Length: 376
Image (cartoon, rainbow, N blue to C red; front, side, top):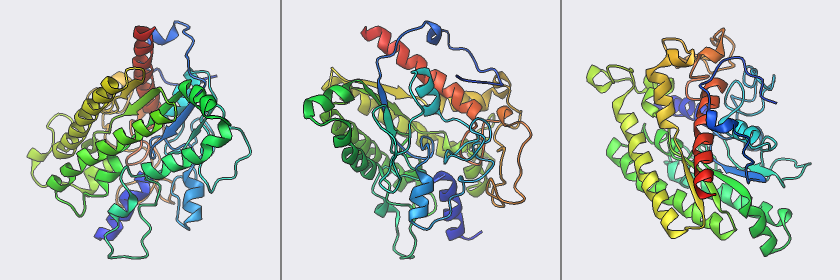
């Protein structure tokens, strides 16, 4: 596979009430009947959060959308919805737990027939934190990857919607003060898009800039009246099938001897998450009336990698359910499809199954509950 083919493949997949069939570790704190204070959810991010923006955004740019076809969406929705999974995402489980509707996608190219008074989702598959132009090297002027759907663009979409939600500034501040803002995941696409043409030292130097952009976005939303944030960290990239296939190493010492994950890419995720948590703590000090909760993606994913049997997952947990790295995307003719997606961590070669997202959502909801209890 050539480098351009590799870049496109990496990007396509990054771009890329509660019936339940498999047990997920319980969340006792969530069964207490607490009434959550949120009236709406506004979300920003990439494919880990996108609930359906990518079909219209990709169509508008005449681009193939690999997730807008079966078997995506087969587990819960029974049809493709633009979600990069076999079913629900973390944001869906959070909305359901908060007794809110599933958060509808919003972008300027989408025909909007309903109200967004209970929330809107601006996340788009393959979105970067930094401006998309940063990742166009100029060697292929016709290349549209990554699309111009970065964090800054999503914030502009939010600001264009804002006047339709409330007519007055005091009304908007009160409205957004009762909303939950989910900001991320952001970072993984900035790093993955850089793996082919930057050294690891150069990529590491991007981390403070990425974290800075997230911090600025939070402050920008605070000026609009936002008071409650859930800010996810990034994933252990060294464990995802996509990276393990395309960025394979000859030296066995590059791999964790227990998990089989690539150490250097997991270290990048840990550095990002550490710096993000430090930045969030500074924002908490600066804005004492604002609640900012860190959403840990890394630790629960590693827990599932290290102890797959605990979650009912197959032993070979780093394999994906749908597709084949380097050969077929999920949904292609001839692509593999496992018999029991709920026994897998990875749905395709970077995104997770509904089962995995459900567990992570419960972890985050416990953090949200604990924070709300401490502040009440």
